[in-house]
Length: 84
Image 1 (tube, rainbow, N blue to C red):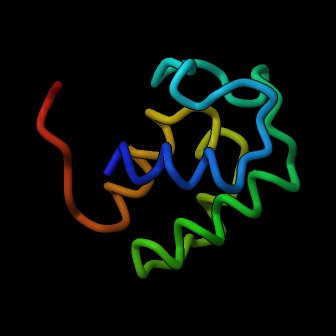
Image 2: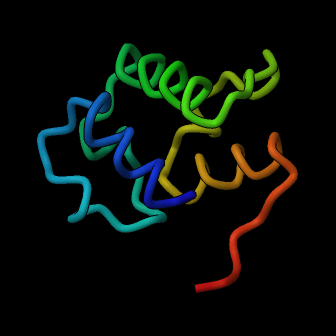
Image 3: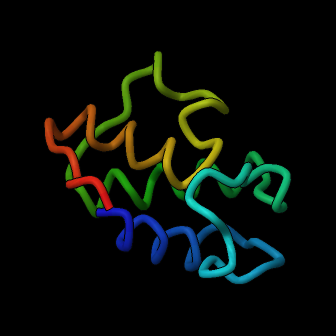
């Protein structure tokens, strides 16, 4: 799941740095993620994982880092990745 999120972030995030250079817990907004790009990522994640973000998860905290996005998607899909 985390790899798919990284791929979507690379495709839709418009980040000035390569996604593979970003740590899982690094602040994506500090790395250059814009509000517009976070919406694009949200839409791409909804399509890729066949889910819909509820209003209470449409916030900066849910998209703060790759780890945060992964936790949010896991909470919506009822899955959890094995500890790496």
